[in-house]
Every structure is written in structure tokens, then in C-alpha cells.
Image (cartoon, rainbow, N blue to C red):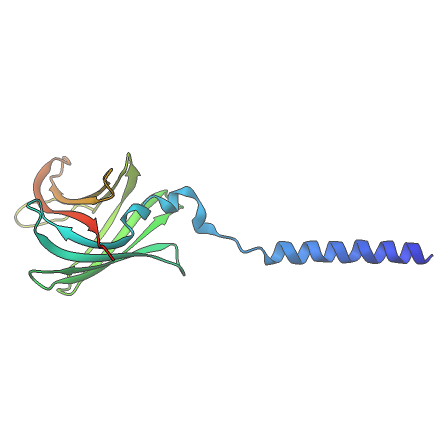
Length: 173
């Protein structure tokens, strides 16, 4: 009889511990590969123009308390500052960015990662001088740098104008 009580106690205890262990496992929803596609942009950067002139700095961090990447831009020439939040939306399999700067300008972009580049585009912007899309592309270069190009595209998605080009180089500590 004692053996039966011991076996029942051991069985009950092991079942209880299995349930507790399963409930205590921390789920990590942001660990799928899609959430890491923009990690190449994370870091402390000096940003240069096409002539290798320093135009600003950018601290891009992966937020540990959210499935997001935060950008913190400071321009060297105009002292403009801005922040963006970037996140992968698993409901529609898209990357999204919300940018706001100290002039009050904001920009919402949506897109995807493709062949070593993040490509995000705005909705059509209606303007007196003509309608356009904002498209920003970040390319992960083989040397560890990142090239960011911001273009205006017409309604047929053809390039109208390059608004910004920055080459991100990791800051040396």
C-alpha cells in the first residue's frame, strides 16, 4: 500500500512540475528570422555623404522591451534631430517605420526586406507641385557599412529625385 501511495505521489508531483514548467517558459515572439532582417542597421554610426563628408550621427538600437528598432538621428550641419521606430508586422508580413523630427515632420513607411536591402515606401503624397511616394532603401554592404537612399517616386513608381544619400560607417570605440 505504501508503494502505491509513493507511486501516486511521484506521478502527481511530476505532472504538477511539468505543468508549472510549461507555464513558466517565456515565449519569445520576436525571435523568428523576420524580426532580425533589419538588425544590420543596429549600431552607433557616423553618416557620410557621397563625398565622404560627415553629415551626422545615428544611434540605432534594438529595443529589449519591444519587437522594435529605434533610430536616433542628429544632423551635423542643420542640428536637426529625429527618431524613428521600426517594426515587423507579422499580421501582414511587412516592415514599418514611423519617423518624427524636431521640425514636426513625420513620415510613415511600409515595405519589406529583399536581397540584402530594406525597402520602405510611403502612401502617395498629394502635393501642389505633383504627387509622389517617399521610398527609402537601406542596403547592407559587404564591408559592414549601410547605404541609405531616400527617393521621390512618381505615381508610376519611377524615380523623380534623390532626396538623401547617406553612407553609415560604424563608430570606432
